[in-house]
Amino acid sequence: MKNFLIFSVFFWFAIALSACGNSATTEFTGPTEKELENLNESNFPIVKEQITLDFFAGQAPATNPDWNDVLIFNEYEEMTNIDINWKMVPHETLSEQRNLAFGSGNLPDAFHSTGIGTADLMKYGEQGMLIPLNDLIDEYAPNFKKIMKDNPDIEKSVTMPDGNIYSLPLIGEPDFLSYRMGPKPFINKVWLDELSMDMPETTEEYYQYLKAVKEQSPSNGAVEEVPFGGPFVGTLYQYLLGSFGLQNKGSAGGLIDVDPDSGDYRFYPISEQYKELLVYMNKLFSEGLIEKNIFTIDHHQYVANYTEGKYGSVVWYSPTKVTGEEVGSQYVGMPALEGPFGDKQWTTLSDPVLIPGAFAITSENKHPAATMRWIDYFYGEEGLEFFFMGIEGETYEEDEEGNLVYKDHILNSEDDLSLTEELKKYFSFPGGGFPSMTTQRFFQGAESSPESIAAAETLEPYLIDDRWIRMPHTKEESDQLRGFGTDIEKYVSEMREKFISGAEPMSNWDTYVNEIENMGLEDYMEVKTTAIERQFAE
Image 1: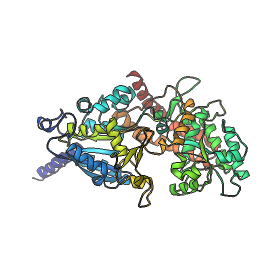
Image 2 (image 1 turned 45 degrees about the horizontal axis):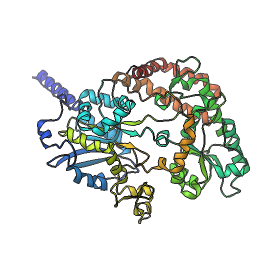
Image 3 (image 1 turned 90 degrees about the vertical axis):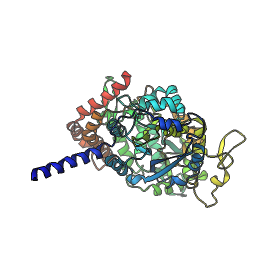
Image 4 (image 1 turned 180 degrees about the vertical axis):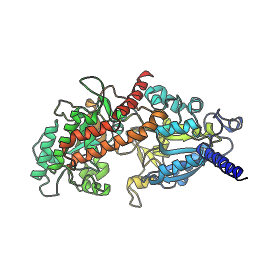
């Protein structure tokens, strides 16, 4: 009897584990006849009889805390006949809550704006919790299908190694360079003129400008000058990579690029060029040319300093959008800088697929075709205008030059709110991470400002050619990288800051390199280069 009880306990425990680990018991075979009877294959409404879908949504700090009462989704419910029950999850607990949903098997109908990584897309796709979208896209997503046809690299980036597409992404319009470049370098042109200096073209000239800002007080006592300021040191580091011949296959390669001498794959954080970059940045920091608390500064303090006009140079977003017209108009975009080895490149151009796992449909969804039609609208011209601009005459209008502009009650809030705060009332896009495509025409963020567009044009001639695209890993590769791969990347990041700040002397460089090699660098390179080669073979 005792043995029977023990067996029973273990039997039901195993069943419970199985249920929690994989809620999908059957393979997805497509929409049911019942769903298709209620579906309109084109135009609105999407369904004949109203349906309700449960969406799990990531709530960024800049977005509305409750999408159940946002203008565009209220309007879209009327258009589609689909009521979305939004479960909002703050970003601070997003990863934990998302993992809990998968682990418990208590799945929503879809995950929206939750940034599911490629490793989890593969894992939960293979387990059947996330359904493959290939056929649904082909049948019910004409807008996204067209995007993939026009941009084969986008299709490659969202297709997992098993051949399935498990999610729809956040895309940056391929030609929207200002957006894809991310933070860009700006210099205080008023101070540059006051110092009688030309626009820096080399890392040495940049150093001389920063030094002059510190020593010669170009504000004439108006503010306490800070030669370079930023919310963290990483933006300056990213700007300078191309000046030292690093990341020469673009940011999609992570810490891997190609050795220009041998043509072999290279882990550049142990290269001589990387070491010289850290020496240069340590020189700037040790001489007080970088904001002294840049490793700990609060973001609001950074914005306050910037708004006071304290910075001689920044690598960030639109100056006028961040600081206002009076201070922001003093800044202009900088070119890529030529470094000590003769390199002069801009390497940061994000893959058009910025977040592959922006929207995923689960095995619990009884209306996958309607759900696909619902989300596909936001990848077409009409849906993009609706998503970012809202309703003509109510939230935006067209000016004399044909530009779409928000109405005055949004641009000049009656409640004295910032533009971002005012936009929350009507839209869900503030905060990012959404499944759609940012375009220069409709996206009204900092990257669309005139000075951001001009800064991107200044950098465009220095963009590297033959860039790699995003490289999804297989489940096995991802499992390996969660171990030694994560450790290596974390160690590189930590030591970068220590070398720049001087907390770690450059005399310990060889120890640093040996440590990385002993952490499994050879295996790391094998996993990474296998993924790169797989992209080339397709």
